[in-house]
Image (cartoon, rainbow, N blue to C red; front, side, top):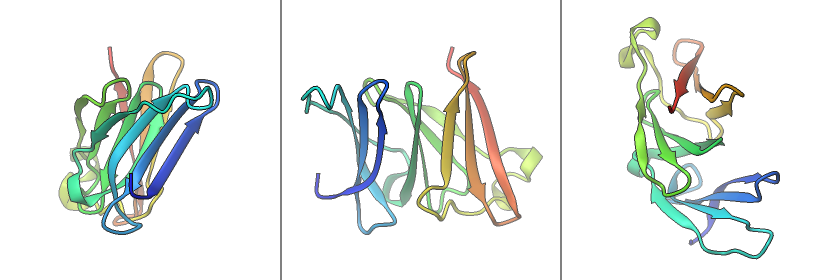
Length: 141
């Protein structure tokens, strides 16, 4: 890893997720997931988000990482933390005007994710193009 661009640490699970800085501080490259980090483990699962060169934001909740990018216009990629496997994407739908009414995710902390007790994930995405926040609801099983 060249330099760290984003970091997430869960002390309850001793889970470290770090995304390397890509072309500049606004973009991220590969994502490293390290379990039992404080116990000395340095073996990491590594993956690259589907957002590619435009990747900018990452949020972690439960068993997944959620990433988005500058020009993705509200699209979110989901990767499983255990092996980095791509699980799919969320796209802005007709209730928010679709992609045409959605702006870039253009701040470094533009995604927030939360796993509810019932296993449902809530993923919030900033979108100041038309003064709104996107909310994706998803259950993995």
